[in-house]
Image (cartoon, rainbow over all chains, first blue to last red; front, side, top):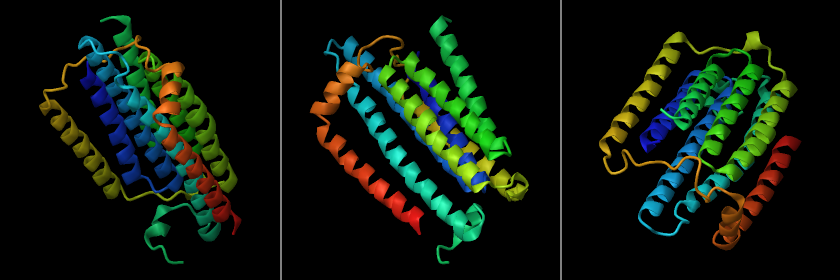
Length: 111
Length: 166
């Protein structure tokens, strides 16, 4: 499988996430679209790691080429989990204050 | 076209269709369920790339923990679905145009990089995605970021409690 198909697929997934952020007003859906973009990037990192692994095998180098990308994906997942907990707490607090999760209420951070 | 390519295309179409359904479904709970399907498709991609550790972690962390958190919050705040405000049609149209332009631009850029085009991705084989090499790398070369991420979790926990309390 050539790398460009993975790149095109991940770009399409990322763009769908961007469209979701731009077109929806429900804050939770916007947040879910951000998760979608994070996952597209994760998948692209793993694809690149396997590409460099294949290149390392072809060049005769031993064999741990590309392991860094997978560690990076692991750390991205860690940060995403922390980010989700904080973000959902903020959304719940916003709902408690305004009784809505419309992101247009957030156009001013005061009140 | 061998079976791996067929699996790649099937998983890709499945993921893209589910991602579009996340956007166009009106009910937020349906959006969450479609997003879980996207994550399962991406886990299938990881398995196809023989990144078994990340496939399992993706299912456990994303589909298991984060999506349950989303469902929990949606059911907790109980938004009426007819009350969800819609953006104007003009703004939606502009958003779709902007996303499509971004996709076109990025694909055009990728098509110009001839140093990586046509490089093969190793499917189904390779040992770097297994738990043993990843664990050795994580606890030898990356042990300081690993410990720092525990501090990050602690601060996230404190922040969530602090935000949720008042």
